[in-house]
Each structure stands twice: as C-alpha cells, then as structure tokens.
Length: 342
Image 1 (cartoon, rainbow, N blue to C red):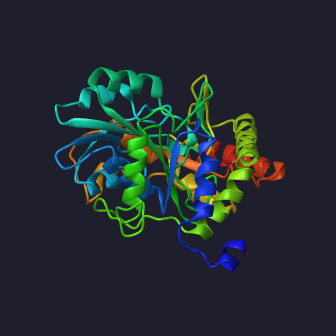
Image 2: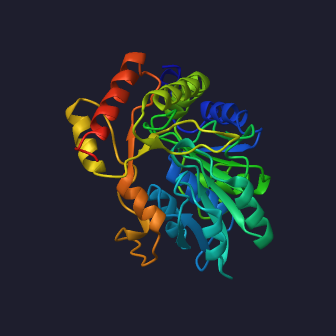
Image 3: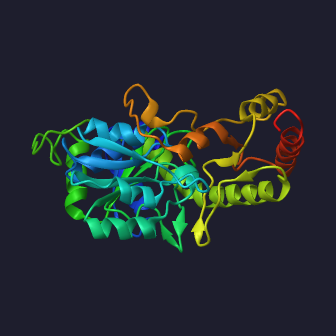
C-alpha cells in the first residue's frame, strides 16, 4: 500500500531495498533484480559474454528455462546426464562433453539441493570455463555453510509463486564481478543506468516496486519457512518406509523446494491413487528437455530418462501440520506397498 500511495510503481527505491536485503544472504555479492528467473538467466549469460557459436553444458533433467536461456542468447545448450541419486548434473558427464567451443557450465541446484560444486569448480578451473548457477529452486541452500549463488561467476534466482519465496513474479542476478553487475543493470533497463543515456542494446527486464515490496517481506520469513520445510522433510523421511527420496550428500543443506521420491514401478498409478485420496503430488519433470521439439537432440541420457519415469514429488511446504504429514506418509506406505505400485 505504501508503494501504491507513493505513485512510484516502476523500478525504484524498494527494488534497491530488496536487492540490498538479498545481498546479505549471498555473502554481499551484487544483486540485480529482474522480472523473472528466466530473465535473470538470460541477463547473466549475456553479461558474461556468452554468444552465438558458444556451447554451454546443461542438464536435461530440469525445467526448460535452463536450456531456453542458453538458446535465447544464441548459444548452443549441450545436454549431459545426471547423478541418479541426487538428480543433479554429473561432473563426470560434464568433463566428457567439453569441446573447444565450450564456454560455460550452467548448473541447476535441483529441487533445492546444491549440485556438486567442488567437483564442478575443479573442472571449470582446469578448462577455464565460466559457471552460471541456476538457483531458481534453492534459496538459502548451501554446501558446508557456503550459500548457493556464491560459487559461480554469476547466479540466477527465481521468485515465481511456486518457489520457496515469491515476489509475485521476479528474479535476481547475483555476481561478485562489478562489471558483470553493471552490464546486468544495463541489460535489464534498455541499456541504460541513467535515463536516456542508452549505452548498449538492452531489454525491459525491470522488476516493479510492487513486486519488490512483496519480495522484501517474503525474504524476512524465508529463514523460518526453510526450517519448517526441512523439519517436514525429516518427518517424511522418518515415516515413509517404502520409497527412497533424493539423496542429500554429507555437508549439503537441502531446502526442499520439492520433496522428491523415487517410485521404481507404476509411478503414474501411485500418483493417481494419491490424487484420488486427496493428497497432492506432481511429476517434476516428465520430459527430458533435450527431447522437447524446440531442441530435439539425439543424445542418450539413461539416468535422466529413468528419472523422468520414476520421480514423484509430494507436499513439503511450511503449512503442513503433523497430521498432514502422517496422512501423506501413511497413504504412500499403503499404496506403494500394495499390488497397485509393485
């Protein structure tokens, strides 16, 4: 209401406040608010100099925006397989895919679990490659206390309504490089920092003051919400007896954007039965990105293929009660142990 009464709805003071607040959670790095997570990815790629003719290695088990952003800047996404236990991009497969045209790795911290950044950074250092973190689902996730978004040359967060926090719609570019930050600010605002002083070809990727005002308040609650997601995940871990979930390596802090199970047989039947029991569930993701018509790659990624056929996510959000968790767990145990799924 303060924003509406101020009459200033475009990017302004509240956007800056949101950026400054978010920066405190990513080791003080530059934060540039934009209008979506996809815009954040595109901005980061262009600001880092990724262009036509370049190759960027990406996972295929993710939302399409990861690869779309690479294609949108004119580069070629090179799809590689995942670790079957974490569902994150496999460093071994990254190394196999590097060619003379490879410029960067775009890493996804899937479902809120950090990717294997120590090994990935070792590879990129040897090959002098850039790293972009797609942290759209991983606000506050960390490895040994180091938050995602602070490992790579740049990172992109999303504040879409389904994420662990939202601004209604929005995204954030994060970088330690002051020149990348400046280019990102130019790119989001028609190529200008000062009005009418256009320096480069830019976009309208601005975040509004209204969205930023929502983001400022949501960010204040994110610590407690994250802790509640983690508590709910621990309870689900303790109570689900029949299926295993995405593995969290030692020293990695998962923030559970999704609580994702592996259903080895008749996953869709289990999903349908849970829905009929009034328990929400969803498949993230049912299609390998490289198989989409927009990419149509012939590469064979067996772990990715298996994941699309076996993953199932169930509620883990902060508003779940203990009785909700018991109901979810009991239904999964009963249905997945019956002839329906096995």
